[in-house]
Length: 304
Length: 244
Image (spheres, each protein chain N blue to C red):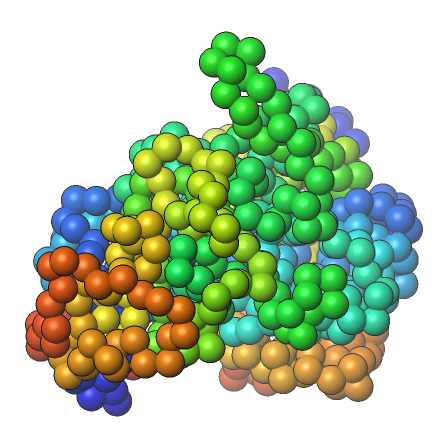
């Protein structure tokens, strides 16, 4: 296809507020991308600002993005293999919500979560697996049925497909048509994005379709599977983006203290999420030297 | 800085010694990654470290905070995804898994999910992550446990990761030839040769009594039990440096 032909494609590049407003409905099941790397904090902060309700959030390893969304009152249910603050501690707002009975959960394992998404991606109702026949996870918050292999007679777990309504992912770059290029640690991001009915991507930069076509092996989600793409430089902070900026390890540690008390997490959300209009505003609240140390100083004030 | 003979360092060094050169090892965050890093820098330069984030043949320069932390892709020979590495694990192509947990029983059943009742826990922890998958699928699982008696319980509050049998001694439904092979503390090394926790050796300066101190259930003694084995001093020194 020629570059000219690509230009006639409709642009999917819209402001993040519109992407979330148009494509993420109350009550939706939302896959959250990013496995330590490239976690879509800007998109999550936007749905918190818009006061989305009754969401079901899912992914294998749920980090402090989940905790913030729970504290903000956006979440009805979580589906996960791990939930915490990686390398630091526990999911404090999640624990409080559980104790208060204000959240539902489906607790799986990381492998079974990936298989659930992969099954949806393949369009099959389940995938057989050797896990979840022993121990207390099956029968805890989930019901795992078994299946007998028609060839060997072996009994296996039948891991059910999970097809999210929307995936939120953050990536290095996309073109206006919505071809999203992502590289670095993937985890379950590709599986979750391609399992979902709609993909909303935030990116560090918008590039030409020619740039996309010059390295198509980097495209994780092709334009026809993407509902909206939004520019959000620094959109993964405090996680990191390969070749763009570093992980703000200190922020994850600070968050552990912040999330210990309902008042302090509420104050955090008021200041860093509800108190700003967008990602540029958020980054503007951080010390310049700190952002500079992470390679983020030039990102403040660039999203539109 | 930890001193030689400190339990923290013994745990890292003794675990590293179980990671044979050339083996493929599924590594987690914390002491497991320190042990793998140490093995790679001493007796096992050909150890292949795999992280659940999809990093294959990683060799992080510093202990990672998360399996997705930048030091992991910066040092990996391949970045696949979760499906690649858990698929390899289920297909039997990974030799060893390293796990830690809050509680362990004599059968090597591990709890990293809740303290107390599942529905109304006293403490809600992080859950399985990949731990259940590793414990179920790896041909050998090494359990890393600081010597804290409260972690060694008759019955774990929740079986996140299956051990040799359930608490009634019934085999867990799982693939053949998988399960816990050893448990390492800062004081000694245990195996499961009898089906339940068996003391195989203690590390200097700890005696047999000290290695079992505070553990309320019966622990078997390996026929080849050795007491106060000296761990290599150069490894202890390097472990101290890596853990800084």
